[in-house]
Length: 440
Image 1 (tube, helix red, strand yellow):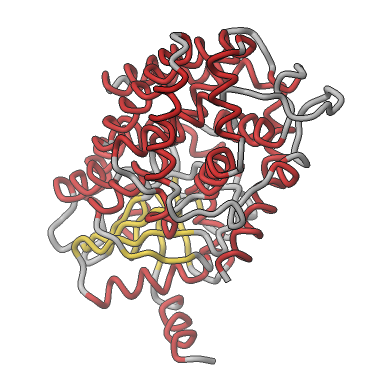
Image 2 (spheres, rainbow, N blue to C red):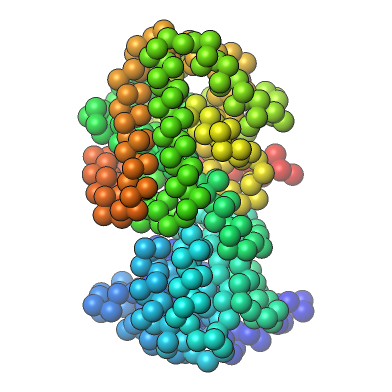
C-alpha cells in the first residue's frame, strides 16, 4: 500500500462526509464516496424525508432528516443545491456546522456560493469548494474537477484532494473568480445556442429528426446536444446563466451576433458576411489545420435520431454555430485556452464548430446558402427570436421565466428524450475516446 493509500485509509476511519442536497449530482457524489469506503450521510428536502430514505435504501450512504443533522456530524460538508437557493439554504444549516469542519459547494457559479459561506458559516470553518464539470450520467474518470481553496490550511485542502481522488477525475486548481470566468467562457454561449435551437423547433412545431432537411452528421450533433440539455433539469443551466455576471455579457453578445449575422443574410450582404466570419475564423481557429480536427461528418453520421432514410447532407446556414464563433471573436475568447476545464458537451460544441469552419469549402457553402437559399430562413428567424428572448430572461435575472421557457420546450421534446439520451451517451463516449487519443 502506498503512502497516499495508507493516509486515505486512516482518514476513512475518522472522517464523515456530508451531502446537503441529494439531487442527481449530490447522489453521484454520495454514492461514489460511499462505494470508496468513506462514511457518508446526506439529506434532501425535509418534507420528503421518508420518500428520500426509501428511494436510496440500500445505497452506501445514510439519509438523514435535514441539513442540521448532516452539518453537526460531518467533517466535510458539500452543499449540492440549486445556485438560486444557495444563500437561503446555507443561512439555515450553516450555523449547525461542526466545529473545525470544512464546507464546500457544487454550484456552477462560485461567486454567490462563496459569499453565502462567508456570511453564514462560523469563522472556524474552512472553505474548500469544488465543481465537477460534467453531468451526473457521465463517467467521472478523466473529467475535469475544479478544487477551490478559498479559506483553508494545507491539511484541510489536502484532505479534500484525497477524498475526491476516488472519482479519478482530472483535478484543476482555481480561485472562485477564475472558475466563474472560465465556466462562462466555455458554457454560457454554447448553452444559449442549443437552448435556442430547442425553442425554435418548438415554435415552428417541428421535430427535426422527422424531416429530411435535418440530415447529416452536424445535424445529428446539434439535435442530440440540444435534446441532451433539455433532458436535464432547468436549474442546471439557469444557475450558470443568471448568477454569473460574466455569463450575462456573453449571452447578450451571442444574441447580438446571431441578430447581426441574420440581418446580413436577409439583406443579401454576402461579401460583408464573409469578411466578418473569416475574421472570426482566423481569431478562433488560427492554430487548427483541416487534418487535425476533432470531429468529422462520417463519425457524427452514426448518431442519428432520424427515421428519414439517409439522403446525404443538406446544406444549411448553420446560423447557431456561426453565432457561437462570432461571439467568441467579439468577446476575445479563444476556447482552446480552456480545454483543461472543458465539459464533455463543450468539447463536442467546439468540435462541431471547428469542423464547420475548418473543413475546406464548408464555411463558404454556409455563407452562400444563408444568403441565396431561403430553405432555412424561417428556422433562422425563429432561432434569432429565441436567442434574443433567452438573453432578455437572463438579463432580467428571472428564474421563473427561465424555468417556464425551458420546461415548455422540454415538454415538447419529452417523447424523444430517453432515446436522445441513449444515443447522446454513445456519441459522447465515442468522441471522448477520440479526444483522449488526440491528447496522448
